[in-house]
Image (cartoon, rainbow, N blue to C red; front, side, top):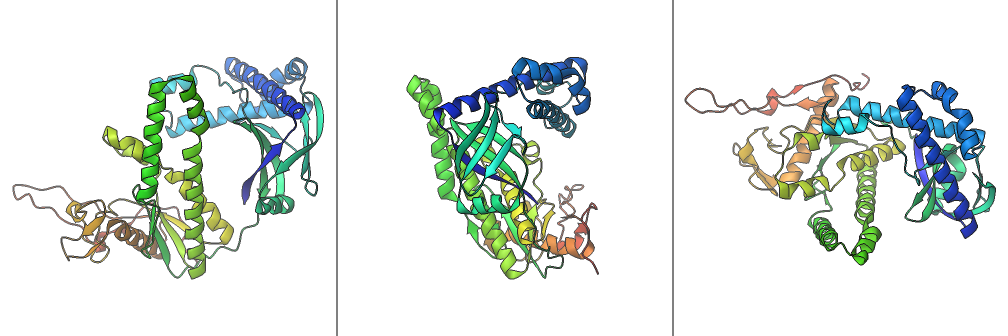
Amino acid sequence: MKLTVQVKLLPTPGQTAALEATLRACNEAASWASCVAFEKDVKRNFALREHTYDQIKARWNLGAQAAQHVIKKTCDAYMTLKANLRAGNLGRPGSKRYRRATEKPIAFRFQGAQPYDDRMLSWQMAERRVSVWTVAGRIKDVAFTAAPEQLATLALYRKGESDLVCRDGMWFLLATCEVPEAPLNTDPHDFLGVDLGIINIATTSDGEIMAGRGLNRIRSRERKLRTKLQRKNTPSAKRRLKKRRRKEARRARDINHKIAKHVVAEAERTGRGIALEELTGIRERVRLRKPQRATHSSWSFAQLGQFIGYKARKAGVLVVHVDPAYTSRTCAECGHIDKANRVSQAWFACRNCGFVDHADRNGSRNIRARARQLWRCGAPSTAPVPPLKPRGRTGRKRHVTASDARCASPGLQPRSS
């Protein structure tokens, strides 16, 4: 399994100047190569190299390895753009956003990340020093620092390229490490259902609620402060905005790491798998009122799912994704589905059997039940049949129970018999 370990560089002023000049030269060359690729419609690595390699080396004084990485970075950017267009992430063909992405070549920021391989970057782990190639020549004895766990991972598993990154005047190396995975538990005796939400970030089927209203108050306060400073628009307000611009993202990332670590540790301790909702495309599917949009978009469910996924792979814990449809309206006791079951954001009360529970806890139990059914029938998700609309003059609805649920689309491999 590939992981990225971030270490912080501690360069001297002279070393900083050389690193800045290197990033600027590499990204200027990448922007020029992008224009050539766009004009000639040549976006494959070896084909683009024939048109740009010699000019990049001579014009920007780059070495052979740096020039090849610049060309490869350009081609990778166009591959990413093509994948986003194909997936519909940039709107429909012909839309304003789609045209803006396709009608001009890709441009690279002057401080964009630059990949380094072992010919351009060497590590001295014992001395905590690196030797880095720059346009001003090889710079030796650049100090770096990291947490003890990161240093141990680097020493044991570092393999492949590293990216040189400048962020808010600080310098980092993002090193690729190939960490061995634990043997996957392909026959869990049960699943730990995890319901992801906005008021409560994660609720497990064991009844544990993580994060909640306190965190949302902090996010709301940060959002109001950001709006106030943007309206003020003075030099001091701009400086404060620049200083705080990544604070909320860092907090969200830290809490997501803590939640993912706790969920995986609990599943590993009890020998269970983890059941999550498949929330891909939720922002495009859900329509919200304007006051709710910022709250809905301010938390990164995809990041939390990724963190749970890679930590689970590292620990050998099975993760399955289920269809989230009607999990908030379904009774975990009798399987009755009704919109009226969700009496409020926090509480669930079944209209059929009278079962009352915390709404997120009830949802996590439904997720766990769908994962169990998924694992029995070997399908990737379990989706209940949606309630039918009123028919005729009676206005009656046919409420679907758990016995009506069926295994849906194929894809997940069933456990071995």
